Each structure stands twice: as structure tokens, then as C-alpha cells.
Length: 83
Image (cartoon, rainbow, N blue to C red; front, side, top):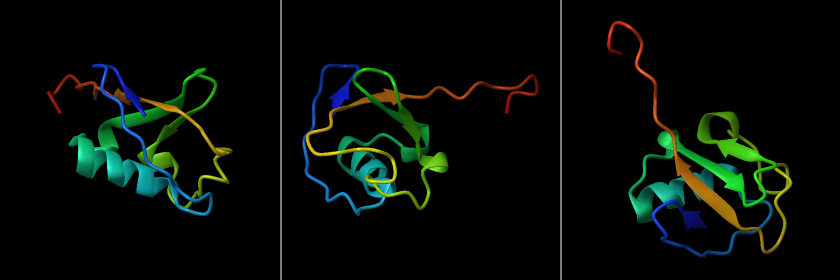
């Protein structure tokens, strides 16, 4: 993993592990809320959001061995009523 602030993280996951496990790891270890994180390939060709990857495995998502991901914090836009 590569974060915008220069931090990096590394861990191995089996291909049959759910994508939610990566988001949970980022949440627990790097203290970034999984719902506010976007993971993307370094090339930018694919991106992954926690709410969209429910039930998908790494294999389902097309992630293979030695895949590096960029971690971006999503900023929720506020509506006119401030929510």
C-alpha cells in the first residue's frame, strides 16, 4: 500500500480472501475509516470502495500476486443542509 502522506504498508492476502479484509486492515492498522477509503491500482485503471466490494474476493476484483494499491481518503461532500 502507498498512502498520500508517503507511508507504506505491506501484507500478503490469499486470493480467496474478501476485499473487506483489506479495508478492515487499513482501518485497524492505519486508523483510516474503511468507509472513507478508496483503494486503487497504481496505474489508476481500477479503484475499489468498501461499499461496492461487499462479497467480492481479491480474485473477483482481478487482483493478483504482487499487486500494489494506492490508498486515498475520500472526502464526503456536504449537502446544502450541512449533512
